[in-house]
Image (cartoon, rainbow, N blue to C red; front, side, top):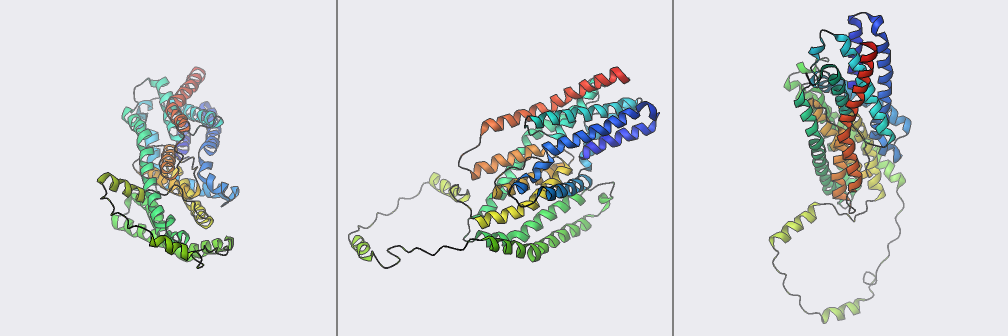
Length: 437
């Protein structure tokens, strides 16, 4: 979304610098293509950030549209500026078009066309691709047609290719750590709902404070956030976190508790066994009297201790979470979906598809990875982040393993995104060059 706005801004600025009548058509076509690109992003990326929340009935589709619009815009404006700079000047050296800005303008049209076309094709074939990487490929495509391989910042391309591996691994690690923490502090306790409500303010503090840090630390130059001193940032971050924690404790907790209590099924009367009711004690006594003393246990080996530790650390794959626990996480998931929408506005979020308790950690871990990448201006794909999180958390939680055939197809779609978008953009640029240049 933010990179699309940047392309339109470049087109509008270029139009204002010379005879408008000769390139007015390019501005009109660029606006139309930008709308098509936005539709492709909505179909392939944005809508899926709220997919599980809508599917579980936590929010309606209209509410999801409203929240997505708000948080996508906030992420783009508050954090996405560094990615815009990378996309504008980092992939291709734009100074080589200083003598002929009309070529640069028409190149922006080719970028929008190549990226929009690829997103539409990928959506038709249900391929989760990266909008950011589509734009990078399209940028390279038009530049190769006009200037050959001169001016292409190859180190930026190397970083982007490296992100294909780094972003899913990092996101998977973060999501796995979060899920294991949630499992130990909430899911495996005697009363998961009570434990979950207890840590809810802590979760909101961490999440909102992290967002505030990403916004104000080395923040937007346009909004003057980069001029805020370190002590001011610390006060803002702590203040935002504490306000979020207070809101969660005094407003959200009572509402969630009441909602869960209203939907709970009355408990069934207990059924006592023969031993609990006093019957069967004679047989048990007779058995005990004839029982031999057990042998002392053998000392446990080091591999056995390590195995026992990991069995304690990892979640119980046979555990079935209660309805009230699932309802608690589905409520929190609305917040993590908004977090994912915010991160997509800053970079590129999609495909938050997971079970409720695990969807929660997947969205959170992937959004954290995307925001960190946005701060350093690296145009990673949070499609990759979310897939990495799904694979990692799914491996921990599910006993069925990963369907590697699906994962293989997703990886193939990642690899072909940059070259295919580049080829489409190059084809459009050749057509424009033949017609208008």
